[in-house]
Image (cartoon, rainbow, N blue to C red; front, side, top):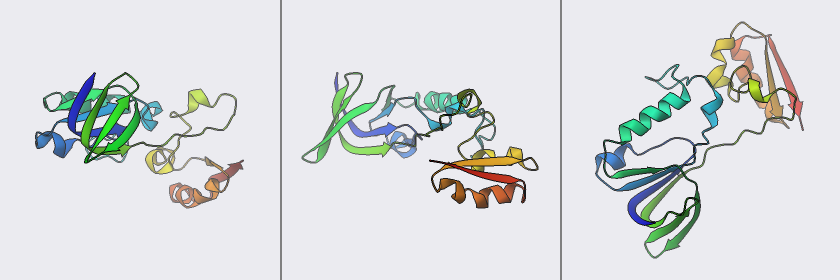
Length: 173
């Protein structure tokens, strides 16, 4: 299916369609559904959404966008973008192709977990990727930070703000 849009947004992370929808510009949001925080039980540090699950937050965002006929959402990955004249042609994994005058990319991050037996079921529950996001709940408790290469050392100042003297830093290569 070939479609034309004023804007196309490729997102793993955050959807930023607020102004686009309010200005009645046509927009396509391609979201592969691989958000980094989906394994976490709650969002922290986002005013008005504290404690809400990431899945619930995404559901609410999708629901909010349904009232705007100018915004289309596809659960797919953008596989190709080519600049053609003053616009862009794009292709998606689901076969959608089209053109847009603007492209916004929000690719997010992919966490590399160490190969440790039993880590997967604990990720997002008691093993976290961000001490800023999830460290508050561990104040006063022993905390260990594991970073690849020199990244573990960068976590030290964050650990110390939680509870000085109760932190252990580990490195894996």
